[in-house]
Image (cartoon, rainbow, N blue to C red; front, side):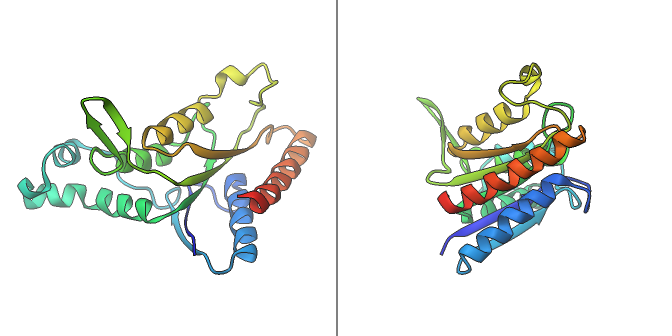
Length: 205
């Protein structure tokens, strides 16, 4: 049995393309692998807290020294990290906002990138602790940020996500990018291509 963590980060409901596509992936995966366990977290509608001063004090001090206030400050982060580490594979639905990710997803990433939990620091530098995992990231973009587009340089979404998840040890990442979703006929074609890519990836993943 494989443990999968599915996360949506769009604040939109039924009109969200990233939600729609990530749901299609999960539904297809369940049909092909009914024995697998899938945990779900909706950080678009139920955001996690942003990092604050108390969180920083707790994250960078030994747990045995924590006051009740510091224990509470890091509690949600501990829950999120435990959930994250319990998964073998990840499915993320992520819209593009201003060429990057929504603040909801950035807040989540800040909660789970933790020294001595998901990344280590020693004499050789940083070392990711989340090894042997796989991720699928399904993005929804209003414009065309594909490899052949003149706007490819504005895509700070995929490079950032590859970098930050690679930083904690996850390098086996597949992207399904639905581009041109604000462009009429191009949207229909892009969604069709994304759905085909989802089916192909389910068969291979």
